[in-house]
Length: 393
Image (cartoon, rainbow, N blue to C red; front, side, top):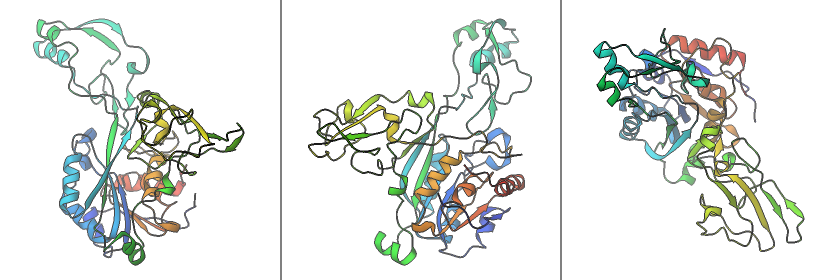
């Protein structure tokens, strides 16, 4: 991984105002985590989804063919996608980031009915394990027991419904457990073809080979691929059938947690006499590959989660003094930055909603120049402090 040789540029301003300082057609890519419009933890900056005007502003400063990666919330990403598209961007795909650490923020209807009736619920037990104490949501907020913010509520108590209405609605809630976030992949319209754009503007497509999924153990059930000759002797590995550098990057990324990996079936790619081309059995239900030479067999077994990139967060990633509530894993942000990076790491990356600066930390390894913008002064201080600390991987 290349090491940064410069300092990122930070603007503690409204991103639309800060963008006016940037020249047109100068930004090579945007990777950002904008507000989801959920009023997260009562934060003012999350009061709405950035509309068309924002994305038109960013379109102007980007080079033709520049890629945009923008995180969205499951309830509001449709508004984000429409705003990006209406601003003139082309929607290319939607990446799913799947994780196991989300905690349900569900309202207990039975308890609400008893509370409205003024009825006291009998404590019949205590929760044990992780659910007994407040936990950290994937976007940083602390929740437990379906009560949103944790004040003096006893989240470990198990209570029995008191009124008839509460008994009828016992076990009913208002939300599902959050387990993924969509990441919109969009592109500023090309100047001619991809080839023409590459030569004229130095921007074109995505970094496929730089983001292939290796066939080496990578947590979450990933296993090495071993290739043998017809005589049974080891001839090459580890790698992946079809390409020695790994599998084609997919529009799904996971965190390697037991909860997520457990959702995937156990599979075996190759082996025996079965061809990979067109085989839709359990041996090849997650993609087809060119058949190997007749005298080569491949053994690649384990959870099908190994077919997708695994981004794991480090507990030390936040850095000292970072209390921002929506910190993304650096490994995840590095992968996304690498996906839209230019050859020889040339180019400028912009994050107009930089928050605590995770994208900037990751992007310094893949771009010549990085620009971060955020209207929240406290977030800018946190980002600047993380960059000074040099908290990377």
